[in-house]
Image 1 (tube, rainbow, N blue to C red):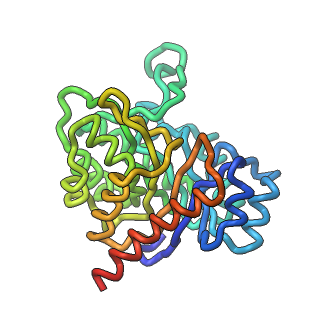
Image 2: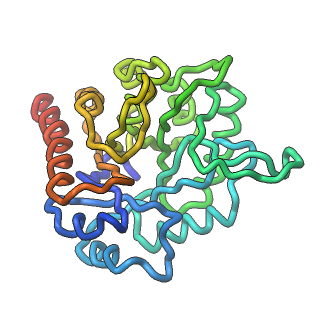
Length: 282
């Protein structure tokens, strides 16, 4: 995926949102959770979008590229098959580990059921880069990786998130999926300034942007994807757009699905931020 590839305004496709997405004007592309797609029987709603020419991007959640074990060949084959079936311009995954145990430890493999943060150390970076290269070699299209939300930091970390991601991009050429809601989450939960992170990130590697809602409880921000996008997340998006014109921006919603009208309002607010910053910077 070249730096000039434009996706536009998109939304995360979910079966519960299929009717709304089909009815919404101005949807340029959808992101599809790769593990929820069977290549031999796509949902009729996805087939309809594809017939309309809507771009589709598979978003993986189970590779665990930050884990000590190498990526599963079977999982990589499945992800590659989905990319080919959807005629995707790229594939995305997470900078995370999702399981522990297994062959290297002599203990049963345990699935976390959650995206867990990779320690920002040089040793962890070496492992991540090796796994990313394996994934890149196995996939038919370019790979982009997402920064995740976290509740805590690992002790004795050696790099900031921006430094960690910068090294990852430099070593592997991987592109970045920047989730501005996750930057906000890490600001509340880990005291990390989103503006400082954005100033240091290699935004020339940006593939696209996630925007989502969450909720704060007892001083902890929960990246729920079940609440409206708050103004503070839109401000992080604005800060990003002031620095770079994102090739694509999309809305995520995974629970408590709103009406079509509410979705349209959230997408309009996102578009207003992106277009407003584009106009301001010429």
